[in-house]
Image (cartoon, rainbow, N blue to C red):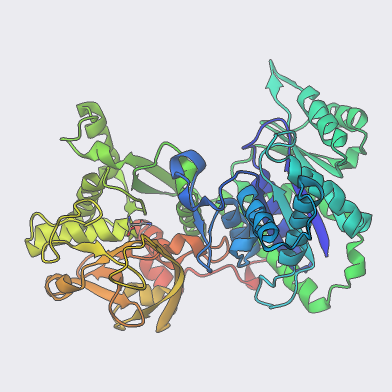
Length: 574
Ligand code: GLN
């Protein structure tokens, strides 16, 4: 197993995740099987309890693990399926060590950060790196490890020490380190001092960079590269410039241009892995598809405007998978994506904190959009505004996609205004609502009497109920699909027949046929919603189908997607 660690210096949030995923992709184009591990040095066991406004989206995995959003980056770039164990947090390793200590596993020894915690971290990495994650079902050959935060933080210290030891555990030719740094431009000058200081910190902790990836707003100048090389004690070929690009999908190509593949091949003796010719060809094919898709997108000029009506719009990372799904879809239909952010509560006139200007601006944005998306969320704030948005889309035949909460609020809107139960709502927002009036009810997953507060999480089946479904067609005509879930409430089974009789059809249900998974509205170009979160499985080269439907309908090309005129990049395109 070859390990590539991606760490960061200077400041966090400069794109370590994209760099790590791009590096993974680059290795995948060589035909290698690549996996990844994300280390989050916070104390939380997982991201499940973290507010999206503070930490961005909670990414849900097949196994129901609630993980850091970077795992989403890996899955999307590398087309792999990760597990909850691929996200290591301080909370998780401490929990494991403390549990072992209680069991007496340490045989009376004093349990310490070094060696017990650091050993636990290394064992964890070695164990999880071996888990097959792609369609070959084979053990991966390369593992990308992204260390969250910045080196030098108190909380990441045990991980840094574990990685320092790890380089000797696995051997020099199996361990490379990419340190992501920042080169700020001050008064037009590219400054190297922060990078020098960051590398000094890194070295003082016993880790040496093999590649210094310098994030910069502009292209790195040659003398700057030479200076970093000289002061940081690495060759100039080990200093890479990663400047701001119009799309992060170009980062892998930027790294290839700077010969990173060649460097890593030598540094990690990748040739010794003897990649089979078929795997090599698959890797080359991947690179070609990636190139064609990203350059084709650069050349598209027509835009598609999607209004994203949510409640966490101040931190765009809260909706990262949704944004990516829209991006993947617009790449497929060759439209430039313009996301119009609409804070749902701004659409409500009565809302206390909404002034008239905000209200009219929000409605203007909504009305100008080619398509409307209401994503997932929790709590009542903004839900009346989301219902207004759904109503607008429904009545004016604007393409609409609702996801999870979006599915629930759109159904409530329909029940109120079409079925005629005017006070209907979700028991999440009005717990005292009776089962006769509530459109959305509490759904204890296992035991109806046990109010454990557990969520329905991870991969579940949806069975199509009819041939007459646009989503079924988009999914390629299959009878059953598997998508990821994260919810506590569901559509009230008691109201189904009333709702369906008015034209809103539940065309997808769970295996037992009890839980509503997809609705589609009759006589509307695209009014679709799902209880599951299709955004978690969207891939760069394989966009999520409900999103593709929305973007295609909003671009006026849904029929071309359905009849195969618009199709994935194939070998004929390169
Ligand atoms: N709050 C809703 C529920 O728990 C929707 C959840 C979501 O959108 N992820 O069912």
